[in-house]
Length: 91
Image 1 (cartoon, rainbow, N blue to C red):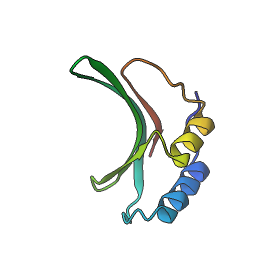
Image 2: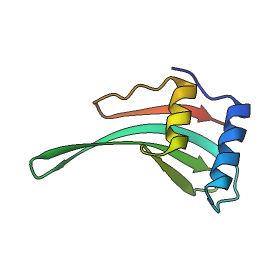
Image 3: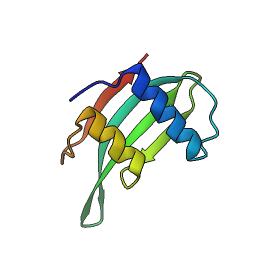
Image 4: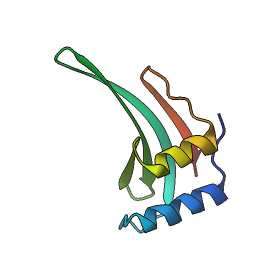
């Protein structure tokens, strides 16, 4: 697993702008999360990446997006089947 460089974070910011993310703050932290939920008899796994901004706002990147796949490939993130939190960038 790799940590993101500042240059890679800037590329992600540009991609977020293209996706019409209206948050105009500096990125403080990027976290890859795997969360698990039991819904009835189903066991759901939610993989996403949280972009946390310096003033408390955040933006969630869902697993089914190209940007999620791009970030996972940059960091060589695993698609694990267990609950986990991995910080991949922190200012």
